[in-house]
Image (cartoon, rainbow, N blue to C red):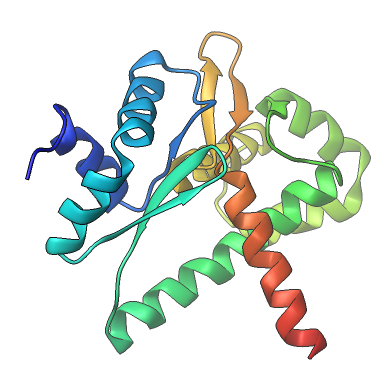
Length: 180
């Protein structure tokens, strides 16, 4: 089976639970996205042999796989933490979505004016550090989850990636289940 060059890089990113997104600000990452896009069928087959399912969504790719009870429990705990992060960012900006740009300074300015946001931040980050450091940590958490990327390091501008749609779909499916 022929697989494209850089398959190892693609695998390393996706196996860590991150996404490959079309709108990632870094050209190298966008190139990997293009490789997967152009070679989806062969990569799907290749990764399925080693137990990973390559999922294709609008403007992003990710892995899924069958997991045991312990792995599912860990994943659920991570989802709960992520829902809290999402709740925070939607309190900050209720129309937050793909392409949205934000900086720790912008978050901090909103926190200083919004006590609900400040309380949510306190619950998310109990460390004894400045509010600015907590705001930066929140955005870095989104980066580590693969739904944001630092677009401009000097100005600390974070860009919301296409993979944010995954989170929106997930939340919509939760709403559907709870409405049934």
